[in-house]
Length: 505
Image (cartoon, rainbow, N blue to C red; front, side):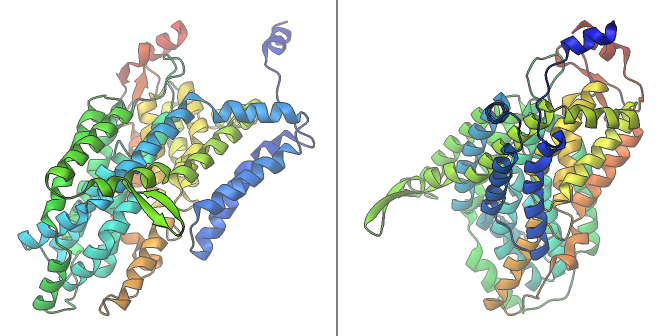
């Protein structure tokens, strides 16, 4: 009788011809091109977008009800969390453009030259500088591409080991990509983890960053110690040549543009909505840039001739469209994720995983495993998170693990893996950029990802400590009534308070 009632209450599953597992086809079309591009050392979001869209279209031909197929896709693509992706990613693009245009990197270089750091100290300085810039900009790629060209040749001539120096660039970029409230990975990891007792609400970014800080800083301190001890190398140029190079790139005013970075971090950690925090950062940055002559109105927006047509260019128009392809791919993946749920495939997967883990410890270790596996796709962290997030979210709900903890595990494992493997987009793009600098700086050595990926200390250390902490339970928190944090350090049982909150919901 109970079984009959269960069948009545069960929602009708969406069906495909042949097998319902065809719902995974869009993900196959998303993953395979990325793995292929990783092998041939190229990266193109346009290719990812094109193949993902093709996969979604081809999958529709196997649906038993084509109209319902597109309705399921629409539901997934128009979720509240997707709206927040679009809004925040658009604002992030504008802020990232402003940071790059205002030459924050020049300020970092000026500070290094003024304090006279070299050798191992310079390698450590590069790591810290990348931590600061990536935390402010939220972009690992922007960080390595902004600081790599000026700091890499300067570091080589100041006695830093070139391979450790490159590793420090990537490691520092990973620090901020994982921790920054404006990082796309922080945003996606938080948005993908929902409360059980706050209907439809995702983990707040401010809370995620606060609880994440201890993991990032432990990995950061250990990485800094390693760079301080083994970051030195041979000198390639004379002090006079080194001084000329540093002078060319120094820009003291660039340091002032770290103030809007601090503004964003301050408001986001206080719990201000990330869109508001970003807006405060952009407005304060524009004011500072205008007052000190760092940027002009034309830098933000201007009408420029493009052949026979006129075109709007600048920080605002360029930044607002910078993340457009990523946004569309994410929307398609969210639609594909809804298909997996509608067919019942997600529930089958979760049932299988639930049989493998029945305690908080095993669940968190499994979360680490899933996050690391999707990170192996090679540098597309937010896409990997979009795939793993529903699984980790469901597993966390089952064990009453707080969404902050789930988001932190997902981000730490996926983002770090994307900055540690030699076929990563970030690593091969950076290696190509630095090697190409030989045309200008003949002393710069040829470098490949396989020569420095193991020197990217922060991502490797962060993954290791996260697995250890998941196993021993350090930092473990559970969800109570109204999303309350219940500390469960070292506990391998769901606290009574968390179970009672779930029963009362």
